[in-house]
Image (cartoon, rainbow, N blue to C red; front, side, top):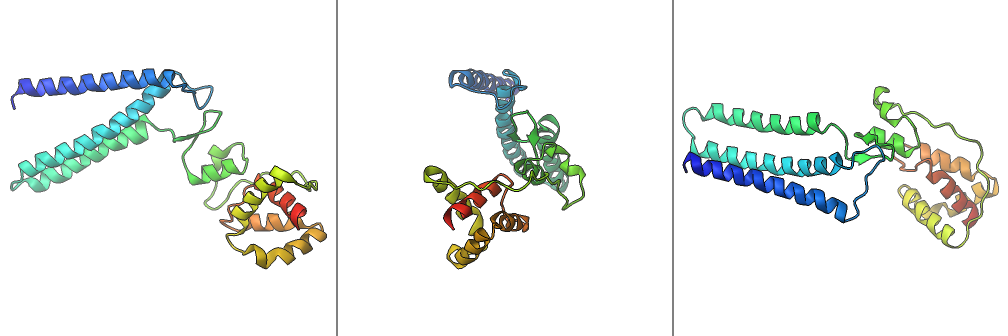
Length: 224
């Protein structure tokens, strides 16, 4: 294949990418696209999304092309071309993921990006400055101050059914409900439903969030 044919193929690829970008950009507004946060750009956000998919396809094509070139030119110098090609491919992907698009995929309404599990856990716990959690020592998490004893609320109807789902989802990881019904009833009679729920929440990997505590407490008070 001569240089003229290569030029045509490159021009076709670039033209196709531009056309796809234009279609993606236009369809994002025709389908009722809404920004994940108010401080995001209406123009840049869909273009960044498209460029992410474009780079994914580009890097995959680069890998296929690089392996094809290596397989066709295997010689006594293949041991140099192989690691060099791998280095170039990894470098391109690293730059695209870590330098160009440094933000995370999960975005809050304030436009902040959640990049780690620790930040996500802190955000779910209601910590306002969840981004700074990475500056804390490993295993240490900021604690949101409690506002005092919860009021006793008796749930009925749909609220009770919704609370039951939260209770079952969180409280059947370590216990069978039937096995602890009598114990829960005793805690409820003593007015210690909140105490036992907070103790369960404090267990590592319990999965109980601060926002789940009132729901579970109200379910116990309403059911047992």
